[in-house]
Amino acid sequence: MRVLLALVLVAFPAVALAQDAAFPPSSGDAGERAAATTGVGAQAEASDGVGGSGKPLLPAHERPIVWVDPGHGGKMEGAVGHKGVLEKAVALQISKRLEEELARSLGARVLLSREGDQDVELSERMRRANEAGAQVFVSVHCNAMPLGPTRAHAKGVETYFLSAEATGEQARRVAAAENAEARKVKASKDPLANILDDLATTEAHRDASALAYAVHQQLIKDLGATDRGVHQAPFIVLMGAQMPAVLVEVGFLTNPAEAALLTDKEHQGKVARSLAAGIASWLDEVARRRMPLEQLEPPVRQAEGGAR
Ligand SMILES: [Zn+2]
Image 1 (cartoon, rainbow, N blue to C red):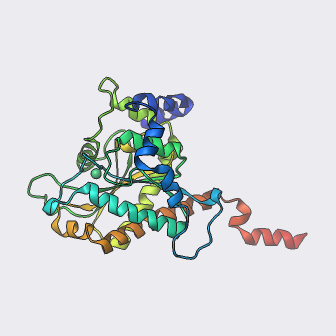
Image 2: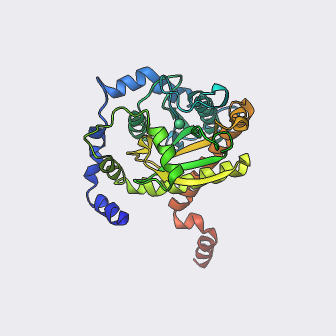
Image 3: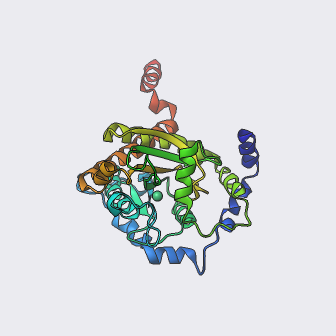
């Protein structure tokens, strides 16, 4: 059934255009407002230089544009963890380290949904990432368990990509928590219709699965974290993506040990390096997929050359 719907949507891609209508900006020119409040323009400049690795700067057209989305911000605090640790603060700290790491190791142009403790509408984040032509979108979050016997014990990493239906109870719970701050979704619009609009961007959606696995496997390997799996759920922040987009829950703030780790600068650096490595391995995979045959099989080319 889902395949059939996807085919219908491929046949009628115009439904993707309905995205902006579904999430109208609150007032004024959203693009200007976004640039003014979060300094996206300035951000692009700031990340233009490659860090201290001494690597030559890639030509502009070869530098990947990566959108990093620190979860929550401003009044939207996200999860409140052990000892009152706020998800919005940890997500921003890790995102800024990820920005540095992506610029240093990949020469990427990195854009952030927010630079500081600002409230940025969920749908606005993806709209701006699409506008910027980002090739990858990574939303950084921390998990939390509701009050109950498992609250302090749940631990580990979960990675998500978009689907119309959650893949289980845990995925449903996480999506509900992360979507809770959305204010602009019109109650009159069927939420499923919104999601189906998004699935029109089928290629990006298919790649999101590969990106999610690349990032997730890298994190599990590098952090030695409990593997809670790759899941799918209807996250508002991922809807309408014209690029592969994932949401990563890098650990549980309600677990005292993980809350301590996630607020530790060294561990944050490790998470950022691992996320960057996961993104890099996925970009490599994409580059290989698009490489002309002769570049993939040099021996064939040599043999042909010799025969002439
Ligand atoms: Zn969150």
